Image (cartoon, rainbow, N blue to C red; front, side, top):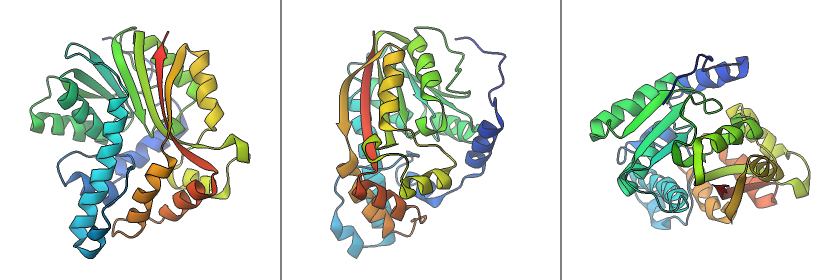
Length: 279
């Protein structure tokens, strides 16, 4: 791998996002991760067990965590065949949860990149705690310009991180990194072109996370422009609604749950998985 002289944080916007995540200590991320030591920064899919609502607060927390880990498993399912000798990239790796799951499943090396130095430090400490620091490493780098070698990755994924960057620039970097036939998997929320621009609920999500949700069509335009051909597209919208319904009733609700539920239910927002191969 090689390093780059370009600063990791290239714009005032990127610095503001890094500052946000460096300071973030949201219980909806930390308490869920405390369940089994896998700290995620994404949402969940699948039906929840309604009996947890009659149990303890910890029962609800554990069920929310089960749903978010189920989401990560579905993402990893779509990476295809990965050998122990392959290398993967987790672009926007957060506190590392999915990277550790990938290493456990495939036995391969995983590099995670994040513009949050706090997240990188946390995740590397977790890699040491799990005894996998030789195989799973996290780096303070920009996923738009990772500094890794061309053709060095068998697979790359983004899990709810693409709304912070330009898709054409991002997929150009991923296309460079992937070997021929390599696989990119994305799970993301995107607004529905059919219903027009961003709805009020989607705009509220943007404001909450200081991001800019892309239109659904932009993903496919940017993939095509960079030699990434979709092989699977899965609409996870209906599958993610139960997670939000449970989270809205939990002690870790942040208030944004109403916006997500409204956007999904009215059809202005979609939760998509896209798997694409490098050609």
